[in-house]
Length: 215
Ligand SMILES: [Zn+2]
Image 1 (cartoon, rainbow, N blue to C red):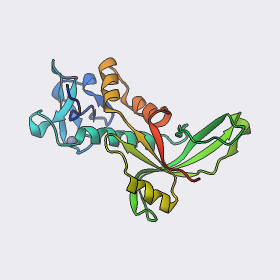
Image 2: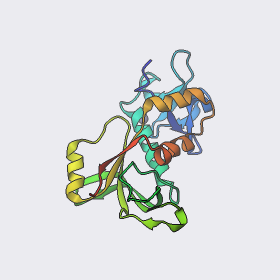
Image 3: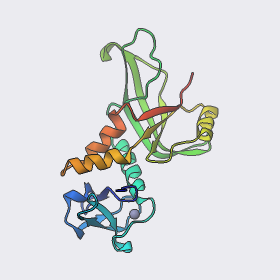
């Protein structure tokens, strides 16, 4: 079964993120596509995992890319709403004698244009990054502003890394696995979408890597 083109989340009439398992079937779900804003049908079928599809296509397929686009946009929103929360950085060489590196999000700017790099990044975040055995006696580490890219299927290429290196902008990529999302949706009927996305974007450590880190 391919889930690549199916839409996993939508916004309901109250603007809350929901899965198709939480709402009435068909147009009665009163949901819209997070990616393109079109009305959606909730598909409660027997063969495929319950999902959403666009009304304009009569429930067949969808606008290309709205499945991945929805995840991308919802993840970006989750990150934007996480000021004050802890943020997992990809591994990097810890300063000697330190046990932990911890970061807290101070500020998030979605869709930020970085002039020096000539690129718009998914999110531009300001962090309080500290290291030490103990959070209370920790010292700041030299990273403050960070470009964050969210990749659902398309990963950033070497040209992107080069631009970030030339502009000297530390940047990371968070990979979001479609399979993982569908697995979680299949498992949990009342999956709280927001908290799932927050855990993927903020807390997972295995899904992120540095695109550029200052030496
Ligand atoms: Zn759409």
